[in-house]
Length: 372
Image (tube, rainbow, N blue to C red; front, top):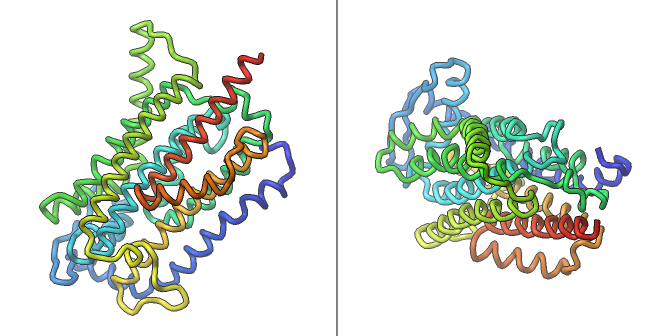
């Protein structure tokens, strides 16, 4: 828990909860959509704008889990079975591809020494965030998570900034993140959007829905393998500030390339204007058609979840500025962020901002160790 009083960090982080409030408002639109999804689920058939495909009623042979996922995957059929709803397809492709970057960042954060012995430690915390996020919009849960994380595990007071025991991420844990994202998230995600067969896309979506579990399994197996390889080979591990920084840059570089390629591919091929693709047109009153309700909720989910992630990063950078570790003016930070958003997508901007913050932390730690 931070050394300062509850009031100050809580007040700083309070705007994060506005995103949850906005998302809750968007969910009041769902009544019409629920009937639409229930009809598809009960008939086991998706049908919209001339696109038809059978839907699975079960997959994992676990009745409670299959029951919940049958609703979720029926809703995702609208997003993935192009061209049933082109707007939903292209927007969700960008959203869910870029969200792999947020998943990678939170996996890395969960490995930080500061979080040991807390709710936010290792992949356990990401399961508790991302798995419920498959049934409850991440635009609701994400801001609450970031609010709690900023309060309980922020890098203030300033002494934590130069304390390796607080900021360190083990190089082995950092190296396990990319396999977790690649095998647990990307592997089922992209076939769900690009497979030639609609049935196969639906099948892959059932697998992707449990990516927090698959990713955590890959993460833990990868760490065990890496520990064994390092021990057997006698390789001397680099210091956390040096080795981890290189590994995280490589990991986030790969994810940023995937994000940017997907963003550019979407901008080139989407037959929907950019503003209409990402900005919801409804707030005061709901849409009249169920498929537009679904598209609108996904748009709000994207903006609220990524908005909360960006605000959390800005709060973290604010702490660094307060400690004198960052002297770059806010106008420059925000200006560069806006440019990267426009050129490479919001998800890539988040990755670059987090990577820059890690560079600052590494310099602070290295400087304190040299002074010591």
